Image (cartoon, rainbow, N blue to C red; front, side, top):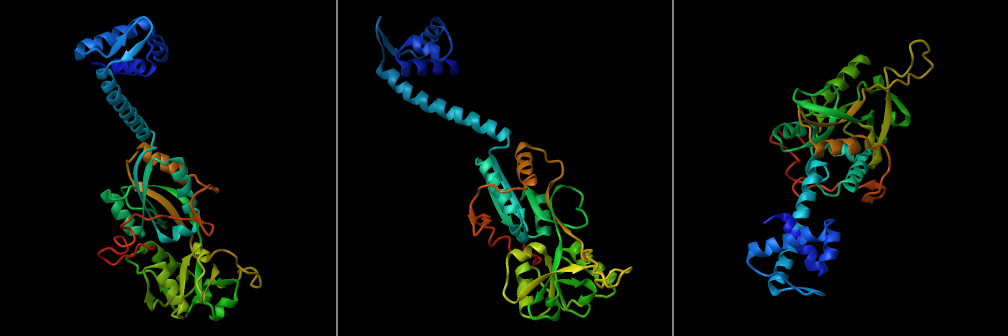
Length: 344
């Protein structure tokens, strides 16, 4: 029995006319009639009652018609799923992201990807940079959006998503809050709330180096893993925090954000002119995946999300696209065994 015979049979059973069925299948009538006859002989049953004027399905033909309709519909769907998977339009993609990415164009890029590839099951998991790297390496994540200051370990490929400056978060009543731009040197003596170095060593070292370049060693009496915890401590007056500029999009009572200028805020040649060079290094948000992986699903995701730079329709709340998390991401990925929070 050949699949072609079943398709010919179904065409005749639906058209109840051999000529119309042959035109539908783009064949001449004699070969179609021969295939129907061969199918009847193989099954040992008569599928059609034929007269010179009419064609009717027999009870056996009606039973076979129903089953063949379901069989061919399932087969066509399976073929389309396979082709869609090969094109990167179907499958499952597990995506990690740092919490501050929600304040960038990332949610809109994800919405654009969902609209472009609705057949892909996209699982989003909020977690920190180091935890993402470990899970990408172990195969638990397919791709991550994470912060990258000084390059990645071996075994990973990456593509830039955006560059983001860092700013200082200050208690609203702090004297420096009156300034529009805070010279980095002015933070000497101001307690700084930083990430623990083990969580994000590159960011920690870059901030320390920038402060020393401005002529002081920062006082770090308090460390906090998550961005929200840092802002809560700032609001409580514990100190100032160096945070991504995107934190401004989520105002918090008692906290203000200020750009940071290099050095003491004045140029060497003209002390009365402000030095507008940034005082802290930019942080890159990169899309990262395991080195050597090259498949249509990943390429399709990188093409849409990595190249996204505009607005596109998606689920939004208050002007920001919603990032639905997977069922377990709100709890399982909050901390790992070393207490590394996923926030950044």
